Length: 100
Image 1 (tube, one colour):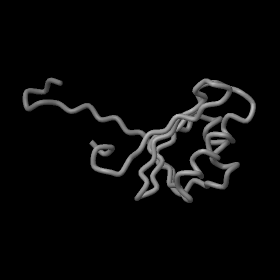
Image 2 (cartoon, rainbow, N blue to C red):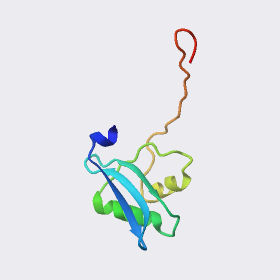
Image 3 (cartoon, rainbow, N blue to C red):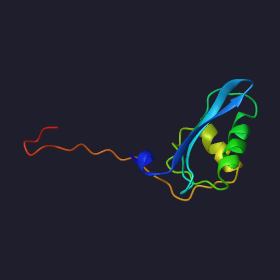
């Protein structure tokens, strides 16, 4: 739904004639919706962010899972700093009859 409402565009980054990474970015709001490397090769993250820089001059990133340590590390290395900590919450809702 969010992707349909925004100005999101998807891109593949190729290296040595094979897809190496991808990203989806809203070119107006600058939100980077998804991004990742497909093959763990030397400099793959650097090539990914170099490609992103060719499309937009600034980015915003939200909801990066804390277990994705490599992704968090690269975001900090390029200068993005976390601004809020988020917590996952789980609530079981019961019907009026007390059943799920």
